[in-house]
Image (cartoon, rainbow, N blue to C red):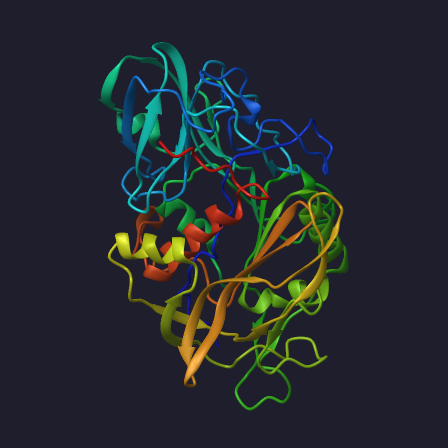
Amino acid sequence: MRKPLVCVLGALLFVVACGSEGRDPFAGGQGPGEGPGGGGDFESKDPGEGKPPPAIGTLTGKVVMPEGTIPISDALVYLTDAAPAPIPREAYCDKCVGLDSYAFTYSKPDGTFELPSYHEGDQFIVVQKGQFRRVRKITVAAGNHALATELTRLPPRTNDAAGDTTPRMLIWPGQWDHVEKSLKKIGVEDFEKFEPGLDLNAYAAKIKALPSYHIVFLPCSGRVKESGASGPACEVSVDAQLKNAAKDFVERGGKLYVSDWSYEYVRQGWPGAISWMGETGQMGSACQPGGADAPARFDDKSLNDWMVALGEGSATLKAAWSTIDKVNAISSTDENGKPFTQTPKVWASVMQGGGARPATVSFQDRCGRVLYSTYHAEGSDSVFGQGDFLAQEKALMHILLEVGVCVGPKPVPPVK
């Protein structure tokens, strides 16, 4: 019995101005995160009056996905006199830091932005969403100027010499959620699909290497049981070493994406955060025997505004083989090592049974985040992975980017 391959990319979502000190996985302060906090000298400092000095001009543009057309919402755009420090090529504690420059802004739901400039001459324009960052040297002149799209397009791959950085991404083996197809559709080329075959030593080595990545995907996986068989609808397993390594990875600052039948890694790794329909103490008890389609509700305002801007305000979330009953308040530890209580954030819900049930949720654990989605990451596929790009797939891609941003409150541009 084959499970349908209709999927969506779980909300990759975490972006704002950030930083970390060195390689300490729990360190904070000024550093190479998402924001001018790690970029050296900036063209204007706060004179202490709370108001920016007069701008000499405005730079306009549009931030888009690496494929070149899909807009990016809430991307950080700023000017700096010195190129920002390199982003660590491993999981790190990416804390949001205060900005010491007036020359920054965020893109709108349609990807457009207006960036004030405060002095002329050679400067660096930085466009960033999580660990996706493009840095280019430009000459700023007085007046209003439109930036070429190539300056504001997120990079498809890391190229240090050119000033392009992408997150280090690992896709763990899974049967049903082909995340790589969705990544290709937004133009991302720089990711690793782990295919060890029967090499058990390769599994053990890769588990130890999880801290060397920024994002790890644990796609939906499990065997569909024959109709009429007793017990849960699926047979799933949990690798104890992988479960423990995944939790450590998140605490260090990594972003963990889990979908559908791989839910046991979330249920056991972060008990109590999410309750699933049908869940008992038995492994796989939350698996459902058939994929369910239901109308979507985008609970996060930024996500909803972005979907509306794409003409996808009304959508159906397709082929989920598990259902979240509810999210729960849990005791957690924040990025500074302090205890706090949180309830997982609901990004999208499905409307069924006369109400709404969470479909995509995320929560923080120390410096990192966990993203869980009942639906998958890819839609239909054709040559080069450029098949139908489903609305749910776009939503998950947006969420994935959002989950990848720094932890803590993001800086707010000054009122002009």
